[in-house]
Length: 84
Image 1 (spheres, rainbow, N blue to C red):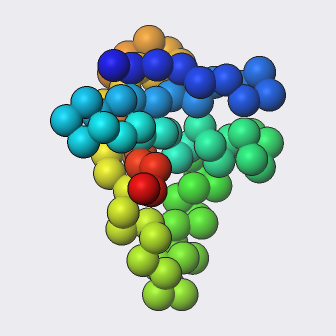
Image 2: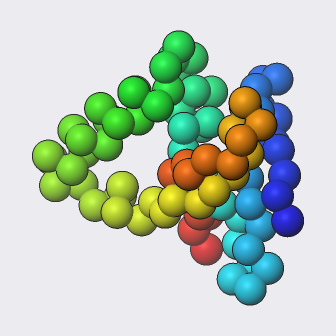
């Protein structure tokens, strides 16, 4: 099940994995909501690089999934799941 969540009127792409019973959320969409960045893809790329340089392994838990992009095309985007 794919769904859009709204946070302060901004869309966050999400995907429900029924097998794992877990939601996955688009990192780029979350970055856009939290930072109000004009280019959240670049913001995420720079942040990820800095985190990896610091030895932070959080970004290794992010996976790529194809989801519908704002232009209507299916594109690979980075997702992270909720922790249980």
